[in-house]
Image (cartoon, rainbow, N blue to C red; front, side, top):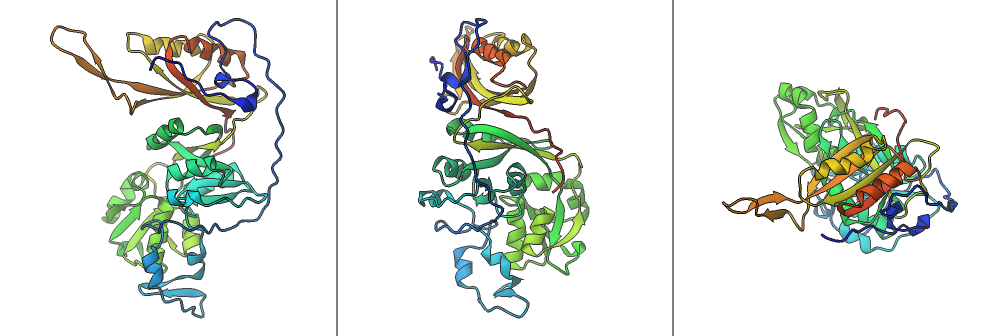
Length: 402
């Protein structure tokens, strides 16, 4: 990839993703006055009713199951199913957006709509509400559906996980950041507190299997091994809780949040079952337009770039930040999908094959800071590709507990 590609940022009044020209001169780019955009927030919450693909277990009940439900409401305010009884409110929860739903025209009100992956009760929903307390949280089936919902104006923002203190990076979202043209406008950190959930009246010793997201299962290895249960993977933690409630599975538990237990009428059989109490997930806040970078508070900037093969090339790339006393907080490498291998004739015995990598870096500086501008101008001299994913305020708030 010979050309140096950088997206334009018309909302900021200049192009090349806030980068200075290659000549690292002392003159600074004059930033325009920010354009004020007023958002009218509303405290209400609304359910999203969209037509589209079926629910898929364990996210929710499928349409085939819905057709066989006995919709007789009993005196306890519950709906009777062939397999048991679930709370009446369960069937009225908003259905996650799927990719096939994205052709539906949006119906915007004054409330900020924020997409997240999962179903109500997911940790991602809690992160969305922490990032935008007055928002309408819109569930999506997949990460990509959340990206597309923002691009197609179905929602205003998206809040998606990017890394966990125990499980590491969420590589899928790194790939989607490059594939889509959304901007990172903020970050939020959320403490993850796992609970073992089951149907009311069930004891944890009666469980034969436990369903949850693979990372949640691995983070509760000690507790689940002690119980001697079979572990089964699900797409998300809250989806596992919903699956148990919808199918009245008395021999099955779920690893999910306390809020999921409240929503789906489940009982908390064990609280705080994670092996490590310091379990924090970092989420990114994504929008169609970037925000104006500032220097009056701590900012973080995220970039992605590629380099030519050669000795010391990565060292030179990282040195542009060290020379300007800029702290790096994250570095992640991902193989390029379109050019996964590079052939190099470096010996008489044949051709060696190396991976071509993309490098994702977070550093502590605002793009309004001349140090950051000069560092990226310097990096652009030998990077074959570079893109600024966003310059945004750092999350300095306590992680809290869900």
